[in-house]
Length: 86
Image (cartoon, rainbow, N blue to C red; front, side):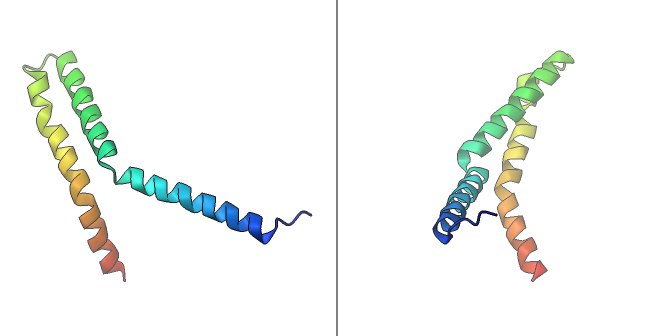
């Protein structure tokens, strides 16, 4: 059986940690939040348009903004939840 060297294992852990850090940075990035808001707006607008709701693009704004607000409050709610678990 092949045992990787300690140096190899440390390099693997460092690479993994870097991937985890980048994933976390993406999850909290404004780019992700804005893209999700845009996609939510477009999906709702297209749906409302398809079912013939008056002013679908105007009516899509409120749910998209609500979604954006929820992404902004989640870190605060998560922190409070973590504090209550201790």
